[in-house]
View 1 (cartoon, helix red, strand yellow):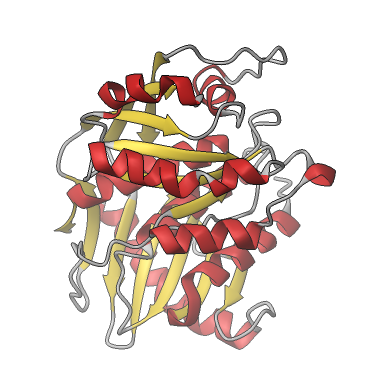
View 2: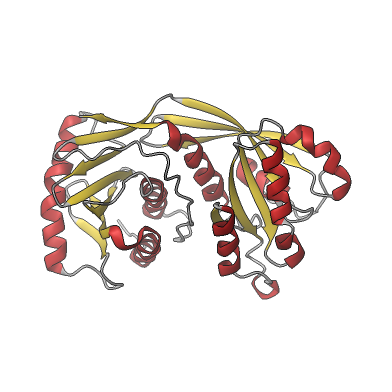
Length: 337
């Protein structure tokens, strides 16, 4: 099988950057435990052979146990703790398993969404599909800690219910690409003839989570961004459970207005889960807002951040997926195997 190893290595480097100092190593292994790509946490170099050997010796028996416990050979996502390390195992399609090795003092809950998103990207790389190696910045909900440390206990990560439905709204100035993002996500299509949204449009889309036995259905309310619709927007914002704040990276004024949008949405729906999206990154030469500026605003508002292109489709699915994962993470629990 031909695999884009450079893209795998780039993905692992992005992953390491987001996990930080608690990461000991990240490995992509096949079902037999053979290491296909790896990175250690200490520096940017690939893991040396002795490090690979040591980690593989720890990983292999757990992989063997996982495949034995789940007779189908499919285990989804699980954790395993030793005295010195914490492991997260995520299936990455039928060919590979993504293994995260953390320090014993690390919390698994903030790392799990990153591991899951990385595993999905790895699966797409193995399938030969187009995928960005970028791992988005995720806001960690430190109040929600559902994965206990249990030494020498294999735990399967599950969700309390198999299906969830959430009202999702998109906020941001007119022309930032909200409607194009929705059409790309729902229909995998891009409309070249721009027509501003009048009031609102409503569409539906499901997000499947391989290995988590759960599904998220978004009822997407695409709101008009123009000022004349502000009075109408209040009723559409009410009872929204999820939302995406969008700006155009080529238009500074759309970025500057985001805090007002944030306040408006939070005033109507205080408990809403939001993420921040910088759209139109395909317009490289016209860019006015840097990635770092977007990330700083996201940190200020305590939001996860990702950049997208509705035109090319880059990171569009990742944006909705990370929001869905953020929503259902609160219903996550572990079950000893």
